[in-house]
Structures are given as structure tokens and as C-alpha cells.
Image (cartoon, rainbow, N blue to C red; front, top):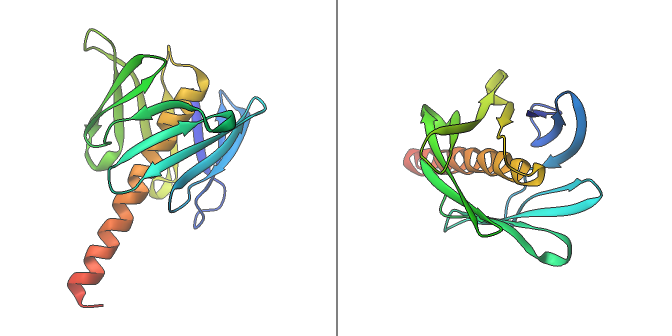
Length: 159
């Protein structure tokens, strides 16, 4: 199981562990690069397409490893000609369930902790890098929604 925890609460930098062992750290960014991380000596970039809600995982040399469709309540991740489906199963993006090919729950991603500063991913059957990608996508989606809500409230308040 993967566990991501903010290193410092006001920041967007996370430490990622697998079953208690440190794997990597990553920061959530604004703009085209949503996050960068190194896993087993390979550098990865999660690229965001802000207006379309699509995310891409780029590996060495900028090759596309995985992509998502528009991330909403239900979304798909495509990797190696395989499609993995996710569904939101709790309010406010707190939990997504990975669905198996027969439509049964096969794993989860949950935001937890104080002010939802932590997240866990239990996604059996997915390569580690794809598990990290799915977890980062959920964190980026939540950040995007919070930012959009703040902009809306400022606009409505006349600020």
C-alpha cells in the first residue's frame, strides 16, 4: 500500500512510502507540470492539461507511459493498451475505487489525515509507477478543484 503525506502542511510537497519504506518525494505544481518524481532511478513527470482535465505520465525522454481521460467522478487511465477505470465512491473526492474488468471493486485511493493532508492507495495488480501516477492524479484533481472554488468565491465577493 502506498501512503503519501505532506512534509509541511502549508506546502504541497509529499513524501511517498510503500508499506512503511520511503520511495520518493514529489511536489504538486501549478501549470503544465503537475508533479515530478523519481522512482527506482527513473525520472517521471505528470503533465496536466488544465482546461481539459487530462493528465499524462511521461517517462524517460518524454515518452508517454500512461494517460487519463477527463478526471471527474468516473475516469479511465490508459496504459500499455490496458484501460483501468476509477469511480468516485465518497463525497468531495475523498475516495476513488479502481474497478476490475468485471465491474467489481479492485482497489482504492483515499484522501485522509488532518485537512486531508495524506492519501493512501491500495491498487493491487497495477505496476508501482502506475499506482503512484493514479495517486498523484487524485491529489492534483483535489488541488485544482480547491483553487477553482477559491477563484469563484473571490469573483463572487467582488475581490
